[in-house]
Image (cartoon, rainbow, N blue to C red):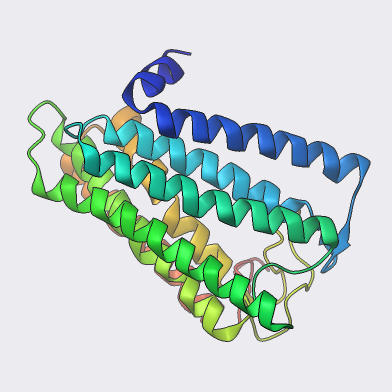
Length: 256
């Protein structure tokens, strides 16, 4: 509870936006049970649930980290850019799930093509906003933060930025699977393909460096060198699963 109290003090916009998305995710979970919609071999509600939860995690992470930066209009601009762009994404994905239709890669009509393009623009603008915060973390001194924690935040932002734009590899193909069609047998909820390469795995791993690196650096490593090694290994892991997917290999292919 102390974390949430501090987060609300640091950045109320990100606190409330994250809380709103959490409530949306819970509502979608209920819908997935009482009114399931089948699409692509899985429950269509799972996709907006994942996006809403990811938005919660991102909003609260940015709210926490922005508390280390000097308060200013630029941080407020980043807040509202994140709110507008990601709210559009979650709303549209949820609407398409309710209709049992695709949101991503749906270019079946001029209208859907336009909306898919707007989603790509929204995701790009949100990523650039996060990248701006990353630049501020590199450009500003933080004498009160331990060096290992500061570099974990910096490198987490870098990996987030890189692997967020990896989403264009999916957009260019109009598919996330490599070597077979989307909708093949996947793991529960995340639906990552068990059979073909899946570009979403690297996308997920790389973007969540923003949370994993700082948490491990703060609570476990507490050393700059170990943090840098962890960031390198983590980045290599994300790169490895990306190359693996591009070779049409499932991320589970190492399992006999």
